Amino acid sequence: MTASPAQTESTEPASASIDLGAFLAGSGGVALLLIVSVAARLMTYDVIADGPYDSYVRSVVIAGVSAIIVAILLAWQFTPAYIWATAGLVLTLLPGDAWHYARLWSTEQFAQEEVVFESTFAGAALDPVRWESELGSGATLAVADGAVRVDTPAGFIGWLEPQFDLERPPPRPWHPAALRERQPDYTIAWETRFRLAGQFYILVEALNEDGRLLLLQARPGDWHLTHPTAEGQAVGTEIHDPAPSPSEWHQLTLKFGPSGTSLAIDGREVWSGIPLEELKRLRFGETRSDDLHGGEMEIRQVRISRIINPAPELAAAEE
Image: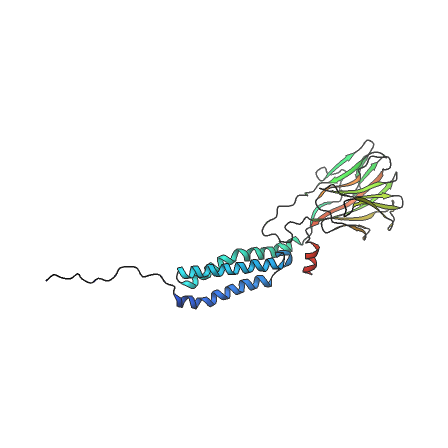
């Protein structure tokens, strides 16, 4: 008799399958983690940090759905299923959560006003590192008693320009979404007194990258402000109240930026105008050389600060 072949067990590997019990046991924790992450991001929404609400909700939903898909795929392939599902969920949600909370933190930092220049004119000479100046023939400059004095004969220039960094750092992903592309608003505050030798004396000139400027001049009996309009024209506005007093110190505050421009004299706002972006140059003193201009000006306690404000409609939405 011929012996029949011996019966042997199959050596083919069994197909991998999900540990359904472990997956179901851990799915409650995975679902809770997903709900907590998504709910926390929605509840901590901030219009300045995160931008428009509809776009933000859409991004949160996409992140949540993506995390669920990744968690299911990992749980199906590996055991223990719920551990891999949790890991996939966390790794998918973490970047979005991190950027969101970093933007919330940076929103508070952006809300702080930054002083970029301050000078009290100590000593007996102008600091060449902090100030640039140009004097025409016959013009003089002197520093004494905590103030700088510029004397400019008619027909000649005599100005001071503070040196500070006008360049903004490039926008980063952790910067607030509503502020990332916004230009800063500048506040220029200083004390001055003056004596006219002609019909006009320029106290300050602020120029932007587009060539639009604010030009504040003292005149006998009033102030004259040259400023741009929304149509791109340059016009003049007379400011009669308060009347300039050549013998007294005046506190002037000029605001220049995308949130709007304004002028305050001795603590009271006397004018406001259209937004002006990208401050390029700021000069105190006489920048014109015609015979109508000339006189003497003293300046003390110059302070320049900047802050990045949201667009007015977003600021209103936040309030």
